[in-house]
Image (tube, rainbow, N blue to C red):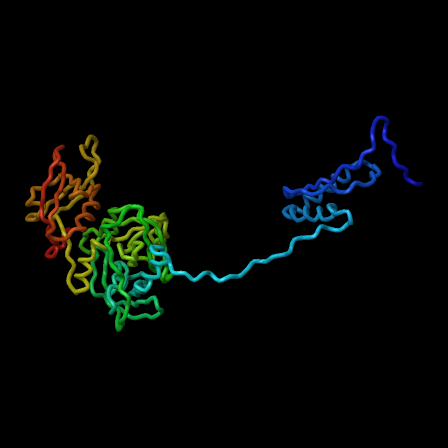
Length: 417
């Protein structure tokens, strides 16, 4: 039997079938509508088409964009029944990076200047081994690093130094200073090295750019950059064999510093050494856990330790400024007139503090213009001076503010801080 076109009800006009609507995303430009054709025979309505389209769209899932494009190629043809011509195909080009000098003051330029002056230090002791970094001080192999780097070797261990050019040499300790966590070592049989340029940590300002270079986790010649986050941050990293506190007024930086950076340089954007990378704050809770950088790194200001470094390099015993007192943080008593400062617990007989009239219970709040927030702050600040320097102390006694000028003692003949 031959199908015959259905006759529309009275009052209705024959219409072309509705244009195809893709279930897939289309580009904003769209396209021409498909050509009109004879109306399909309505056997069972349009439910079958809708169900088919929905089922297809669920099946292709993440490939819907591709399927949508394919659907347009099938139905969106031109009048001749062929697809529209496509644009000429192009591919990615491979080019050379322009050869240009590093910009003045860029991290790239700093790295080029300073890397030849930074070494990796491998240390092996009787019970442990480790690695750190160092700063070349002389062409014949004097190298500055942290005391805690070389302390692993003890009296019978070994120290080796790896240079930026790939060479290496054995080294020996010339001097150590646990109170400032510094040490100087001598590489054997080397010459023609590139000494680092020493800058001024006193010239630093919060917010200025700095670069850290070293061997974090043994990864030699690693360069990281950041800013000076804070200055004169009191950092206490332990004590020496006599119980004297190892503390320094640190440069805080967010340049990534990790285990193995210790002893390496913190430099300004002129490539001048302004600090010795020495410690970090981590979130690790275990004493055996080796945490990484969380953006809280600390460097020893180079100004504070260069006189001590010179003493060690010359084979002398390092000396430090001292007041001749023992202090603690201010007790948090209710109604206390002062809540921050270093409270005097004991005054050594004959010390500069005793001669200046300081007494037990006095709370030192300033040294010159340096605010003193606690015991570590006072120790770190006094360590930044040299024996014989004159300073003005501000202290509280019985609710009254007092000042006194005194000349700092030396610890050359005593182990007390």
